[in-house]
Image 1: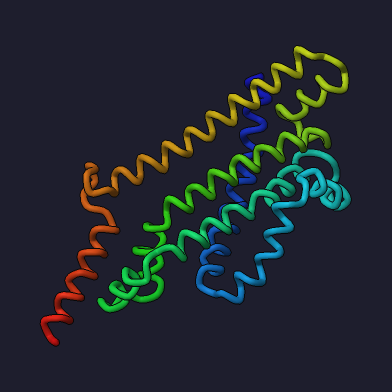
Image 2: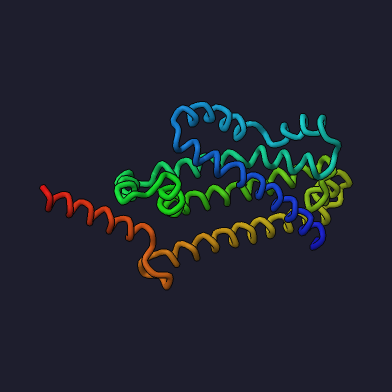
Length: 224
């Protein structure tokens, strides 16, 4: 099942790359604008609650059967969690930290790049992890429309009553999902440990900005 697994993995990577490129900027814009968040909420709700197989119908009408409809359906289905968790992570950054960075002359882009995104990184990584899992599920379903990979093997085992073939494909899908999940989690944990105050990478952004905020409060009290 190795060639089929690599075929499935390639489709997942393409779908996740496109999803992250679209979802993270949308999540940041949604965190900056309450009106945009309210407008996007029903759309994201519909994208998450609609069954994944439904996305394949209009895509097949526009494109022929194969890998392209599967990747497009995966992108649509996997966008929502990354957008929501990016928005949540940016909004959960304490306002005191942002105000302290702005008080020291940081521009809006610098505050976003050096303060908000590093502090929201765990939430963003969780959104990317969920996007990967959802993209994998749709890529497997896309085996019904000739997307190939492990999904096709599972469908072939089901339609031809080849129980062994279906079980092997199912176990391969399970192992691939576990490996992808563990790799993404390990990447996030490693980055966070390096940024932490007890890690080997020195003091992180959170203690730095808290120290800046504390120093700003001390100076304001002294002046008073």
